[in-house]
Image (tube, rainbow, N blue to C red; front, side, top):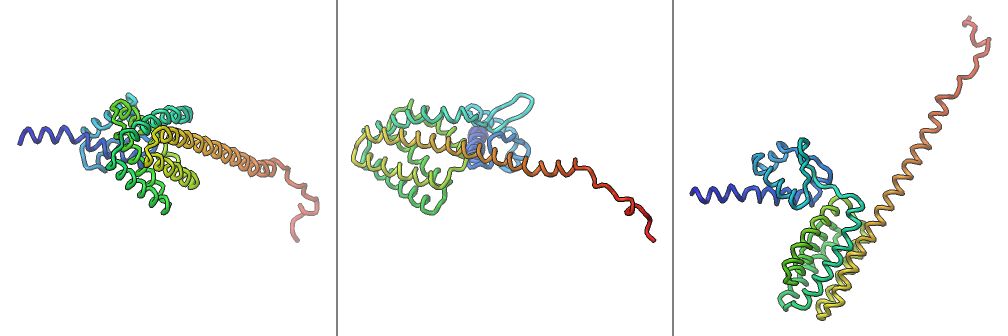
Length: 258
């Protein structure tokens, strides 16, 4: 009993880390959020000790930032960091696709097609969160099929940051349809065993995500600017009214009523 109990205690923080990671990826713990240990440990039904160990694991993954004397915060990526992530990930994912197609088996293709059908279903229903979750499964399977442990390790690490970014930025429905179209083209290349085309399509897919993200950021900046202009337009007449002198009172108006 004692060895089993020690293993259970040692693995508890791993389970807590998995649950907190999921909360980060689904947006329950948004970027920049300060982790309240008492509150979160109560929600998870555990003590603060395994939570603290879990936070160390997530800090090592880059999902949590530990600030001495201030606490733990969900990592918040700067726009520059997000923008530079895409070309690196595009290069790595393209290599994964090439190697995966070269090594694929009939069983691998069947699993990919099964995952892709679920992507089609979620896109048709407009469930973007479920769509991206299944898309991650497809990409992960390609990484595994590539049979390169270094590619798998580095690409998996970077895709964590991609998921972190997606949790904070909702993509428009049009991008969802474009993403599905890109994956359809990828699946055709995989099915016919065209490794080089699969790599090029994967690279295009990631760079298209970068382009969509840039467009979304530009749109947000324009909305913010237009909002500031609108606020100024509302404030201006109020200020003018406040500074306008009161009308002069005629002498007759100052006489007491009869």
